[in-house]
Image 1 (cartoon, helix red, strand yellow):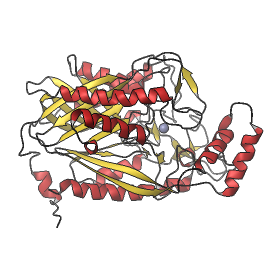
Image 2 (cartoon, protein in one colour; image 1 turned 90 degrees about the vertical axis):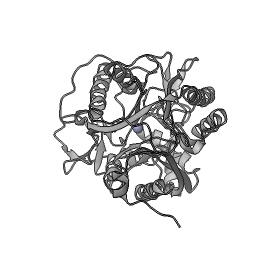
Image 3 (cartoon, rainbow, N blue to C red; image 1 turned 135 degrees about the horizontal axis):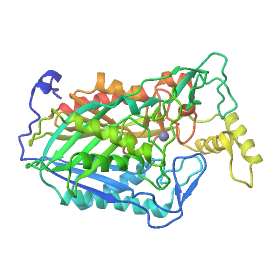
Image 4 (cartoon, rainbow, N blue to C red; image 1 turned 120 degrees about the vertical axis):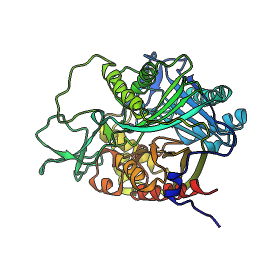
Length: 467
Ligand SMILES: [Zn+2]
């Protein structure tokens, strides 16, 4: 018989483990490619980077409570397929003994990193896929080797000024065209700023900056793992770690951290939220200025989140994983026929515009299986729950998990973790339509995917509390 701890008891109990004292190690593994030009993920058409503006990293944190070891890795990449992540975990398990199920590997969603997942016009660079797999495993190995006595604290603060819902309901009479020849979408992604046709945002934002702080027993900052629900900023040339890299530098400076400190910013539930204030004029800034500004604001909130934090040395660590079957939204025979016709006309030249790009995606989606297995994970680090979803998760889903599903006091939801299964809108957002729902390799899970994922996360939360 399974026995569940009542939530109240858990909240009142200290985050203590009976096992030995806590150890932690962190390492920022450089993953900048050495060969250029290289394909860049994140656009409709492929782009080639010829240099790195700033280095890319796989930021690794290993925790050890004496019985259980966890590894959390956040990679400067747009999206990483499950096969690559599973291969990196298997390699790292061999080198460290940390079970793969106790590892969480996510992508930041910088749109200026080498392609390792095929989406729209960009296809993976095979050599870099191999390189990245090995480097992630090496990073975990180095963080593991660096493990030493540590203490942990967690907390939450808010930065509401850097997140905006990017899906807008438009005034009656405005037609929103989709790339499949239809005009029934009720919302538009990234509408023109200050447009007179803007009605209201179609969803909320999550302003929380959730933080896990790792220090040595004598108060030296070792690592800071944060989570914020912002898609990315995008004002730096490829290759770049975007504001995720700038955050690591900014938070290190604010904490007066020494060499070896690793700042880590994971992507929260930002599937529908970006950094554009649609109700204000654009301000003129230099390249990289917005990245620095946003990073600084999020780092300020991260430091504030720890103001009242109490550091503990004996912490329960746990990781529970599951896999659920989700249906794939496949095109009908007629839709495939229409797409093939569009591609036939474009034969012999690069594809242009939404219609042609999505025609190719339609043909590719026809070859997808009818259902896919989607990995889900929840880690417990003391009273902090880290939920991992392999999608570009909408803000509402993160808010729901935090408010009604998590059994722990502090919760963050990491998107694009342990694989890539496209956007995750709610069924209500599917009904509204818009870019994030348009069927492609970037959005293909069944309409009911999010309630099924929330239910499975709820089950994992229960499993987290069983002995
Ligand atoms: Zn995205």
